[in-house]
Length: 119
Image 1 (spheres, rainbow, N blue to C red):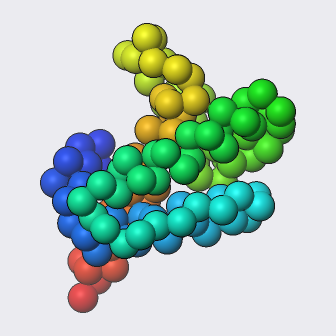
Image 2 (image 1 turned 90 degrees about the horizontal axis):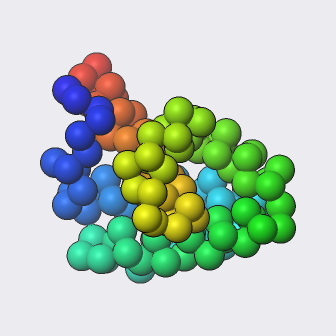
C-alpha cells in the first residue's frame, strides 16, 4: 500500500467523513470551528474554504499557534519545503491548507488500513 498516493481514497465517503471529523477535532483543540455538511461531492473544497482563512490569519497574527497546529496534525518542515518548491506560484496559506487536508486523509487511511488488516 502506497500511503503517498491518496487518490484512490478521495471519493470514499466514509473516509471523507472520518477525515472531516479528524479535522474538526484537531482545529477545535485550538478554538477554531470547522463544519462539514457530510457531502462527499465537494468535501475538499468545503473544508479548504474553511481552513485556509484560519491558516492565513494564524500566519499573520499567531505564528506559535500556527506551528502548534502543524505539529498536532503532523505536517513536517520537509513536506512544507517540498510543497512550496512544487507550487511556488500558490499562496503559502493555500499550500499549507492542502498539506493539512492530505495529511488528515492519510492518517484516516492508515488507521483504517491497520484496523482492517488485524481482522
